[in-house]
Length: 278
Image (cartoon, rainbow, N blue to C red; front, side, top):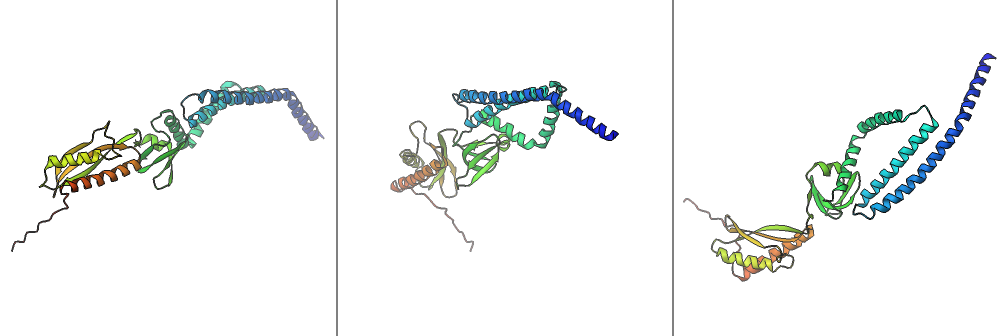
């Protein structure tokens, strides 16, 4: 009978302890409910304030999430201390510190991309719709998230790049400006007048619709003595999108060829002279 009496006594102690802690648990649940309401209110207030700024939508959502998590963290700590009086803020913070170190080592890459994403979202050099190039990947930025960035290549493929890659490596933003400089090489025969050829080429390029000539100069430089021609470096400004570059290059090459033909200026192909000893 003694083991049975001991068991009954233990059950009574557990029941008594549970009954004694019920008010504390009830208060903790009330605090959690209040925390839920406060978190919801803070989310609404922070979102309303940040929407009036020029911050990116992804960054706004991140800040709203942080504000909500902060309220929940404070509320859970208060509820836990009330429910379990032996817990103290110092003990809880120490536990959170040890846990955060362990989680940090376990999810190092995720946190690295997360922090890189925050920095990318804060600085505004790269925008949605920009054409960028990084580590052999080129395309239009479609989405910038906290952990990754979506880039649509010119052939339609979608590339998902981790933000740490964009943050740690050189990133070329080809559409940082609305205008971009383009260069081609055009050669004329050695028998032609260099100044006349330069003038004809410059006029042909300036007359092209895709060439920006009112605010940006069209530059023509005699560049080198090639095997069969005097080569000119032809430089002009056009739109910064890849399609703008291709369309402008097509128009300029066509216009130069037509203008040189009309002026009777030869565009030579490589000449080869064969000399036989005997």
